[in-house]
Image 1 (tube, rainbow, N blue to C red):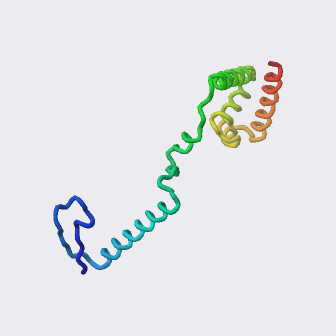
Image 2: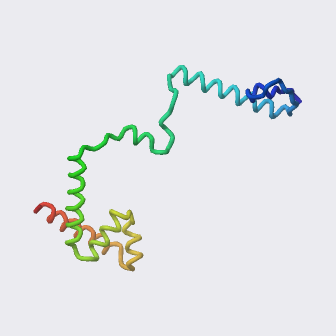
Image 3: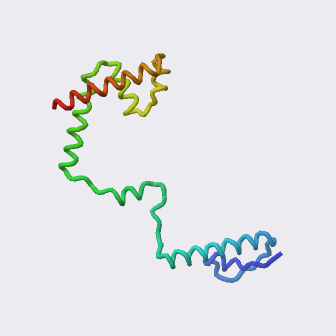
Length: 139
């Protein structure tokens, strides 16, 4: 058993308070202390006081440059043209293209849902995309 000062762990304690803890816990606490001090030293040496690697999208926000009104308008017009071209396709082709490219469904899954051969879905999507391309080139 080792003695530990709780005031060292909890600075808000007004006075020293000693407790006995098992050796394994004392060694683990000492190991955590050493790791924390090593981390502080590394961040100081490499001037890495903060990290953007949080997986909450902060990196994207920092790097994303806001679009100008002209770029926003161009995106809107492009999207409208794309939907207009999609609307001109036969219903089956439009649904298949929408499911694959907008909903992210694989061609195999679409084939299973529609109970048709996967090759038929693939060909239908290819033909639909060619028709959309022709329509968009005419604009």
